[in-house]
Length: 314
Image 1 (cartoon, one colour):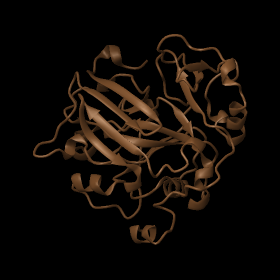
Image 2 (image 1 turned 135 degrees about the vertical axis):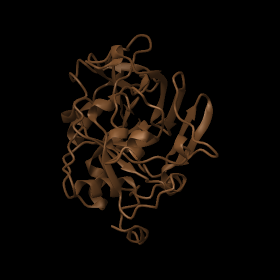
Image 3 (image 1 turned 90 degrees about the vertical axis):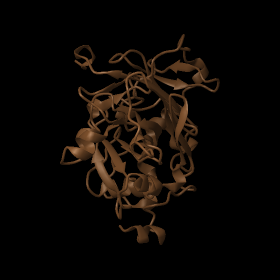
Image 4 (image 1 turned 180 degrees about the vertical axis):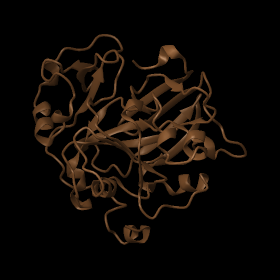
């Protein structure tokens, strides 16, 4: 599908705000607890975490279907126990099978990267071992010199999707989340081959804090999106400037691989990444703090740390 086809209204580049996706009340779903010990939770109207573990054992892919989400929406939130303190959040979905990403999906980001606007979505994969909680430390790989940031809207698949059309594609989506597509630009751009090796390092995929169901995000193509580095606003955009919209992305990717419940698609980043800074690029260094968020989907905060053997995930 070409960009000119998108502009003619093919659906690849636009979302369908009045699409009836599912009939459940809004849910902000989380997983909380120490790494490997996360429990499912839900955010109540006062912003408190409620423990869902008596209802479901984990926020697994099987709990993301329309029927399963309707069942969760019927649970009286006020009856669930409040989680004390400020718990750590993990990735809001367990059992992620694929972590797909879309490159150069904002025209102004492609321009700052000095790369042509893609005629079709650029699809690559981030290793699922890159997944981390939204506020976990980002660990620069051993020898890394060009770490970078990319705030992105994440799509979480709720139902098996294969060869779906754009007009129906959002029916296969369980919800949306914030993703930081952390990147190592030397590995990505200067070491040959595909982008994957600059995208899949451990901790390079913070996701969350919440999975927000689609009924609370009727038009994912109109969300403010931002990132700050050490308190300085680096990225400021809106998903309406995406080249290819969420419905088109889900449809397109489903032509090449079957999307399964729990799969995550990161949809690209607005301008303001470190490699695009003028006159000189800015890259991540130990001690940097990234803060990022998307309208209605919550915020993330990560401290950048150095690699050491003790930080290798067992």
